[in-house]
Image (cartoon, rainbow, N blue to C red; front, side, top):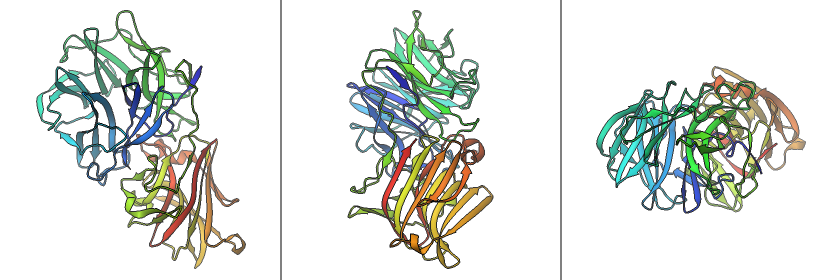
Length: 490
């Protein structure tokens, strides 16, 4: 049976996975978006369902000080002694903050953070003889500490384990014990095209560690024609077929530009006769043969269910818990503006990660803007000052549809004055379509304008960690009623 990468589309990087009672659980980085750390479950490693977000309360996560591509970095999920653990780093203009949260039910509420006083990122967890160890990256060096997991107190360390296997920026460590050896797997080479994964092992948990003769474990750095690039930051897991697999991050570039962000990939792996882990193909393929007992579900479409209380798990907002600014009522969604505009990076915006270059994002809503400061519509966002929005507002004392393109200090507007015959009790239908290398913008079936997707790429917006998020928003003093909101790929 053939399977295709990515297994989770869009901005879901830094995957970490564990298995409990035949069910697999995966977490990803979420950066400046709230709620934080999406968590998925699967029974076959191929088809994943989001079951929650580990950081869903402001008491756990206040993203107000995080810049674009900051926020929550590289979580690791592990299970030990009847409890799930997620450990991660919050980075902001105030510095680094490492912490762990726990839950007995990964689909339920997770605990408030237990903070760790360490200077680094990408923490991981390992237990042995009731001792809790944390491995993490600090300025290109891998360290280890022993902690009291109930208080976060450091009991031993930090002790340096390695500078890596020759690549720059050693990070993303994970530790396992197998056949008498401690195995340390690392990401090296930076997170762009030079990314690769390496492995070391030693007979003592504190080292020394010796590099694998088969390094890299996996990489696409020398395969420029492969559609997947930037492969690394891996985690190892045994599949339901009792074979070995690697989950990694990777990107699908469009003309050397990253639009979708870093996504979650999967590939078979194996242990060599002399005890080293290797990917089956030596690189991350777009498609591979396997037998995980099921066909792959490639449907990534989304339709907002208005008969609910809270937003679906998949909906995210920049830096802010916007629960106070929406209400599901009578099979409608009522949204209100907070005190921010899109440029502030904290507006009343609810979006989903763009998962394909070709898609349609469509909304039908009822709104009645009062002045030029009111905006109600759709937006594709890459960063605070890199976005494209299509919204209903007031221009020259008349209701109008405006297409705004914002790229740092460059801002343009295309104004389309609403025709009376197209107005229907204040209902507005807006659509953004991804087509090959551009976004097309529509009011009902009226074409408003277009723009290249590359203008929102990670390279253009200088957002190395994130991808584009598309959704609906409201700015100003009014409110709006959302009748429908859909995202369809292809």
